[in-house]
Image 1 (cartoon, rainbow, N blue to C red):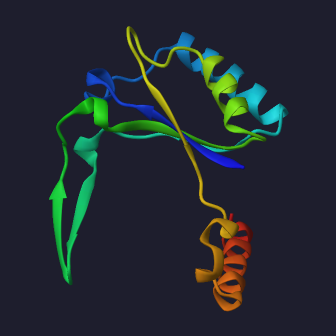
Image 2: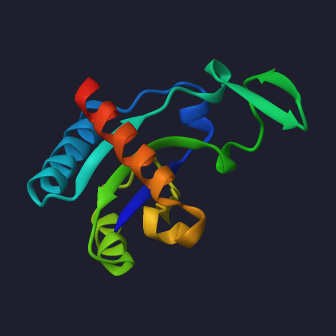
Length: 141
């Protein structure tokens, strides 16, 4: 199963405070463990919400709001995409993560939908399209 690991933002990440050499070294070693174990598929840090935008959908209307956004604890500062055998395995890996912030930090784990999760709504034609798009995307990287 694939899971998305979401590192919650805080006041420092929203202010654009960059991690120091020690945390970068610790995270680099942790990411290396994840890669060697065949767990990590992707992972990146994100710029603060002040450099982002939100698009709100209301029927056929679209409205854009530029950042920054309030409630730093509800925002995301970074992510990993992992391939694991179970949610328990993902939890164990997250528990081994270096503390990403000074003081309190929170990391959320969310399961990624797989094709079989959609049942009959994902017709053979839609399944073929999904597989084709994944292959094209992988070839472009």
